[in-house]
Amino acid sequence: MKSHRHILTIGTTIPGIKRCGWLGCAFAGPIERPAPAVQGSETSGSAASQIEGSPRLMARAAVLEAIRGNSEGLTDERGIEITGLDPSTYRPRRVELVQSGGVYDSGKKRMTKSGREAVVWRVR
Image 1: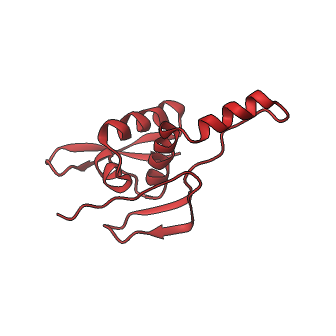
Image 2: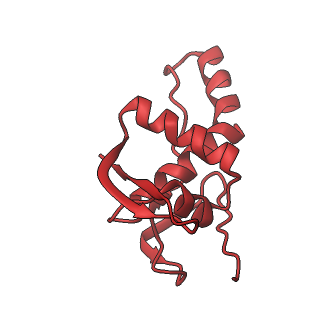
């Protein structure tokens, strides 16, 4: 089977919805949002600029955008295929999104390649 990966970088935006042509996957909106900083605070601005480029935040943004871009939701397996992230990077970032309330268990299940059921995740 042919592999499929999206390379996502800071500041990447995809206007509207762009279908990649691989089993109907789609992305929408900005990949990364700027880190918050207190206006007029030199130290806050400096800290925010250091956070913006963190691989952890980039990966979290990639996971969020992959799920958001698929209106029917995604299993972890499918999200890993779409983002090209390692499973040990993808799943912890998805867990963070669930804990923050941005992503939720849709109550639906889909079969994985191994024939097991997997949770379908959606964005609120």
